[in-house]
Amino acid sequence: MLKDARFWTAVVAFGAAACLLGPTVLRARAPAVAEESIAEIRYVCTKTGEVFTRRLTAAALPHPTTGEATLVPAVYDSKKKTWKPGPPLDVMQRRGLLRPSS
Image (cartoon, rainbow, N blue to C red; front, top):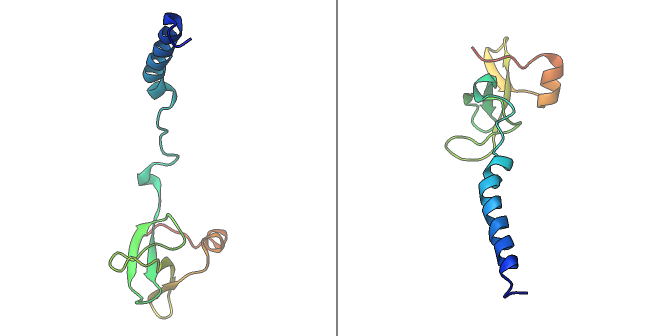
């Protein structure tokens, strides 16, 4: 069987077809949402209280300098005029607290 020319012709043909059709069939998918359409919100560091504006991607983001996941979505306290850590993202969404930063 290993000396059969038809076998090796079929193997080479299959390999060539896979190389030619693979990129077409297994094409990289476009992102579900364009990067520009993701809202930017305020995040506050739970350790230092610093406020950052970042795209809404996760409940906790890494701090730019320390790398620790201490940045959480923030809500504005109008009485104290400061940003403070907010409730979980699903609660913020239900309450209408997630507004893009301006």
